[in-house]
Amino acid sequence: MNHAPLRTPFVPGLLLLLLLLALFSAPVGAQGFDKFELWQGETKLRGANIWLRVVVPELDGDEFLGNGHVGPPYTQEDFDRLATLGANWVNVSGPGLYTMTPPYRLDEKVQAEWDRLLALIAKADLFAVISLRTGPGRSDFTFYRDGAGNWFDRKLLIETVWTEQAAQDAWVAMWRHTAERYRKHAVVVGYDLMTEPNAPGALLEIWEPNEFMAQHAGTLYDWNRLYPRISRAVREVDPDTPILIGAMGWSAVAWLPSLEPTGDSRTVYVVHQYEPQDSYTHQGPDGRHRYPGRFDADHDGEPEPVDRAWLNRLLNPVDQFEKLHGVPVAVNEFGVQRWVPGGAVFLKDLMALFEQRGMNHALWMFSPSWPPARNNDEFDLLHGPDANHHAEVESNALVQAIREGWRHNRIRPSTVGK
Image (cartoon, rainbow, N blue to C red; front, side, top):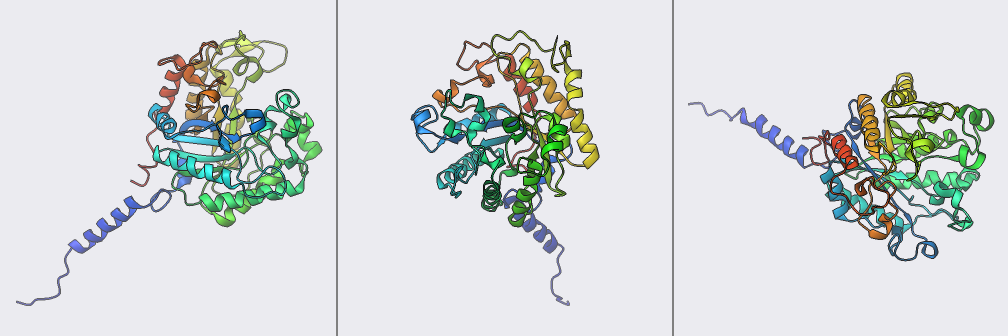
């Protein structure tokens, strides 16, 4: 019998097995998983924001936000609970890795907190987006600027990122460093370059995009001038992780058309949706406007029906932007104060409209279990709709709306590529 070398069909099968084992043991973002696919097609990411800032001891003491450098403190149990509620995405709205005042440099304590948070989020089997609220020339107090000189010292209000070239240059450098550090992180699926760019309204009291562009296009106030530079810096060190960009005007839907796509093929454009804000979502515990209802939501002096059809029309700029530019749009902030009448129906209708458009969506916000910070609970839906109640309500319509919206999640870091 001729004993020729054995050429068994089992060899290709063995190779296939080895390839599969390599694939399944590879980190998220490696073979078989493209993070940008999470932002395309149907809705795949549904979750909530968390908020953090650098602690100011003379203002915060050592309890309100904890006694660390960044607060409030989030724990593993907090993220595990968020996952149990059904979320698969945490939009981490927090401080940038560089200092807010010159000389602009790496804040190693902030960086350490980002490292810690991302490790906790990964262990909870959640995806994360890094959304930088602050950085060179911008403090978190820009979001509460009406309180300057009232409940906080005016010196804490830092907004020179819109007036000083050095601050903008440092913001670019900060993002280059951030992207280089986290480009291979398994659960980081996006970089939001700045949370709610706000120069037009905050510094110039201009509320209409056309008016702003006519007067200030191309100046330091113009976010459209800065974010292409940041995007290029990110791509110099990280060609893959999706970039998220929101418009000026606090990223409101109405300002989305003023965004100019960068041409980067892995960029997602984002909006924040709180409208009708003054007359409904932020009306306070004494508000009387109910959703659905009839009231003046567009400030024209005349009441109109405010319902799902009204919200659908509000999102028309999203449809037009996607059609015009062929890019994905997501909403990484939306919400309603917990005591607002009809809030649960409002959330259900909004999430349904996002789903129709294939928009990933993140609710504002998910609070930590840290008690002092949680007392500020306007958007803590787990506390229920009673403004005078400041503890968790096991079952309420708001929580049911969240669970209903998040139950459609099918993908998590542990399942991608498999």
